[in-house]
Image 1 (cartoon, helix red, strand yellow):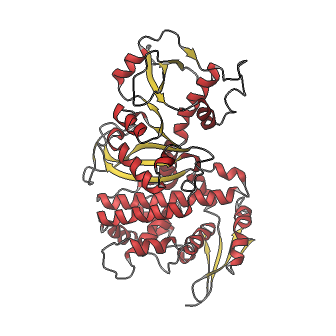
Image 2 (tube, helix red, strand yellow; image 1 turned 90 degrees about the horizontal axis):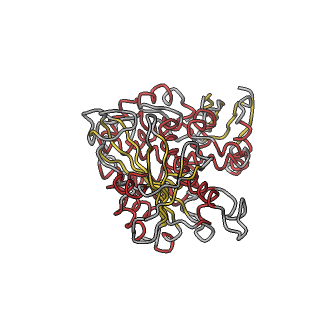
Image 3 (cartoon, rainbow, N blue to C red; image 1 turned 45 degrees about the horizontal axis):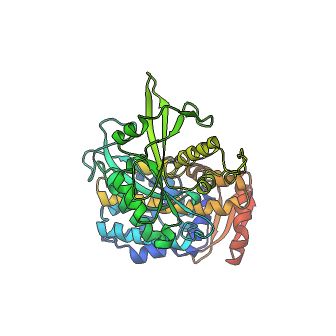
Amino acid sequence: MEQYTGFSAHASLATIGLWMKEKEIWKKIEEQVTIKQKTIKHTPHDKLKDVFINILSGGRGLVEINHRVRSDKALQMAFGRVACAEQSVASEMLNACTEMSAQQMEEVARTIYQEFSQGYRHDYEAGYLLLAIDLTGLLAGKQAEGSTKGYFSGAKNARGRQLGRVSASQYAEVVCEQLYDGKVQLEKCLPGLVEMAEKVLNLDENRRKRTILRVDGGGGTDGNINWGLLRGYYWISKVKNWQRTSKLVAPITDWQIIPELAGHEVAWAPTPHGYEQPMRQLAVRWPKPKGDWHYCVLVFNLSDEMIFGLAGLPPAGQAGQTMSGTPTERELLSAIMKVYDLRGGGVETSFKNSKQGLGLNKRNKKKFHAQHMLVLLAQLAYNIISWVRNELSKHKPEMAHFGMLRMIRDAFAISGTLQFDQKGDLVLVVLNQAHKLAKTFYETWQSTFARDNLSLILGEI
């Protein structure tokens, strides 16, 4: 082929394509994932890559492939494509995915996570690994496979599917995911999700003893709590049983105000419920709009030291300490509430990032395994973006706080010119120097690219 130089609205994203090619990430997918569909112009794996590029470039529905990816030849070439499939053809490829295809993709995702993630390399001697677990609803039409009535936040009498996720909160990574029908609740699928995470992270008995499970209230049944404790995990969740909650809070008369959590009051349950291990049980109440109170009970077996560490506060007793050097009661209660409230900063925030940034809830397929494949592609995109953000934040620390939306909308949308040699290899990237993040990309990647005989420069576009 001839040399090619072209403009791309996502020239910075081309650097990610080069990184994936260097690490042979897509090669792993091609070698291990089977999609039985006839090849006419594009192979099934080519079409799968087109869908993936669309996700990284900010596409929501599959229809955006046509104007977001097909119109950007330079971007296609940066990811090893010489052309892009039409969106309807990519959709047919997804429909050809089977349960085996999805299972194979899960295995590839596990392999990639183990090779590149921070969560897999967590230092258990230095500290505890925190895994946050929850479900989120994905709305779907009545004709979609696995689409049933269930709980979907803010949508009454809606239908859809449920997505279970285990997130490594300290590293903003998705460890594993599983797609379920719409009526599934966390209570039933929690052990299966934890077992998936154990496989991905190689959580043996010793590692489980250095791992904390932070679970949404829907998973806080006696059976699940005892199961987690017997597996050796540390645990923090709400009690799911409302009758148990009512019984635990009934004798409480002395409630304490927590200034850091406006409108909430807390108190220790005077007669804790018995579990497989002793569990501290903290009752929380907050007012209803029309009077009376909402109640919940947090159950956990975390030490004071673990609580202060997870809350990001000074070690117990260093701030507001008593004469004995132990933390004050108010200090401890505030830390506990912060730890559980940070649950929203883990898996719930990751769901929000996936939906707002990656358009997870905008790509709906009628076939269940087609939808599962889309979920797994979005999971791969999520983790790759997290790893790229880690590198960029070394040169621009504030980028560590960028969500998926800002990464795709801002960091991956730096325009520029891409030049390819006769072999189709990228040899020159010129980023628009007027973009405020262009210098960060330059500082992050220019030395790496120099080793690959590729030039990265800033220029006027």
